[in-house]
Image (cartoon, rainbow over all chains, first blue to last red; front, side, top):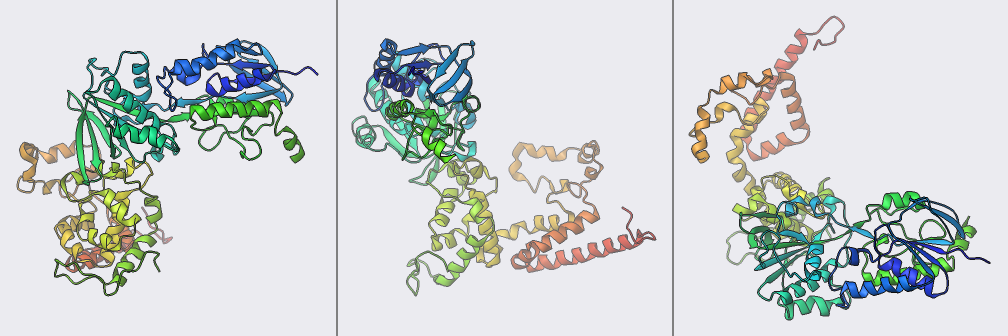
Length: 351
Length: 253
């Protein structure tokens, strides 16, 4: 029996993990990536040190990329997008934008997320004031080695505010989900800022702190006890400027009075939106999206990687906000499901 | 019956106040009316104490008023706290609803305040008459003319807080208003002319929605004046209808 390869869409942590798992098992995989390079958000957007390993993204995820590229069973296609997808489990045919046809046994969607665009919360000053930045920009400041600087004039900030839940848990803009990682990423980032410039004071404004599981000790408490990061329970109403510094308006919920506080740098801890391509992906692959716009996932108890279409599987942040570690685990789970054609027989039996 | 815990009977009085304690039954009756308000569940969904409502509230800048506190008192069913807030605090809200536009969970503290005000009036709380007395003049204007502020009410004496801008009241207002294309605005006695039919319909709405009943509670004298004006206008309207009736019995608009 000649086995067709497993088609994997997306070359981030989930897709890399799936490709490596399929290749290592001795089966063939074709990895299709929209961008010019593999690695997904951690590589393409220049993340610094990852949570919770503290390894540099270029080492940790870069290592995953190298292993996939060296895997003889994996064919990597970059700058490539699937335009049409037809057929049945075991004999799917994908057509790429350049006309190339790929016959596939099954498909895994590891298409990831899109960072929330802070322009959608104009009251918090992003796009109006150059010293209002996102966590992604601070990641780039750290990974570039240039340190923490105010974009307006390059000075080292005296006071930095990190605002949590920007584009998360906000019904006003239709984003009801918690993006899961921003609390821990922000706590880690605050510690990194304190380490890079000890004269800088860092304040985190929060509604809840969700450094879940083991992150509680290593990130939440360590950032307070060792790095002296200040946590203030307040959701900021607006970020303006007095012409020299940023002015942050909030309520000190302990003394119950509105306050205005000056800052040099304001960082938006931006959340994870559904991939902006999800409507297209849904149409091309014939899979349904959930009410939030992520790719729908069946109940995890039988097969966690199942989409609404038999033979098409999903992993990572394509299904909702996800950590890198869990995206990798889901990529491996999806590889196993795709290789065993999990759920296909069940779906047929149900029909 | 409400779900909250019962306070000990007799209730514990404020040790530094001569005021008699409010009976638990009265507090419960007030809260039941608040919670049964048709909009209540629409205005409150939960609260994390993030404070964005109070941070953004213009009234919180100047008064001992916090929209977050209002939401918390209701969400935690703090009956004494609710009663206390209904004495003065709820009247500090300017009903701008910026809080509702900001709340990440789409609560509406401003909407809750509106409910609290309605219930305060229904229960004839002592604060109501006191707080609303200065608004009698505006209320009379609204009820008799259909709008609350007329250009000729704007005088130097009435608006000392305008500072240098007060010179603007010396403008030739009638000339300026004649320049507005809509003829209903060619007047200084009201903001715009409200025709008889609209006035009568407004009264009917106020009557049906209980606004006039609230007015009777707040200010009995004003209620009498307004009732007289209303009877007069209704008579006028009836006369106009009779005068304009054609042979088929239809009115000619």
